[in-house]
Length: 171
Image 1: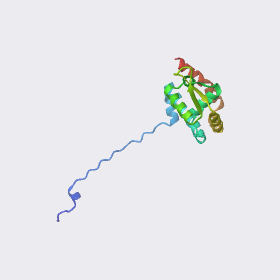
Image 2: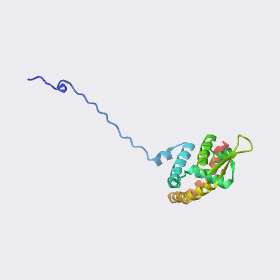
Image 3: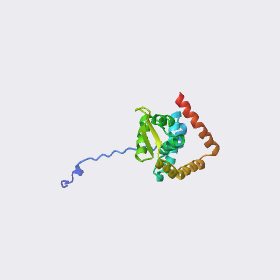
């Protein structure tokens, strides 16, 4: 026998393999229905619905939360950032960041209020045009929701959500 010139001939090679058991995850709907937490259910619902609206609004160059801010000011008139935050149940930092973005896009103006701590937020003509530009996209999102959910359930949800929000704000 000749001498092996290949180092592998002199080594024992050991190979380890791992078998991973494939765990079957529940569907998103099943996982959602299993949540025991009110907040978790509402949060996931809000994310799913917001995703649907953002999908439609994207081509109008606006997101659902931005359109909501513009529409709130269009409906209620000028208000302070704090008042807007209260009506949208949003933190001050969130409102401040969103207002800055909308002001940068010239959809809102921000002026000093009665004291230096208050800032008055108003809708601009460009903001009104943006609402109108977004309206057909918003209507498509509304239609998709109506088509995806039985009307009695959708109506019940629509009527129940403000009550739930009010309860959470009072709790």
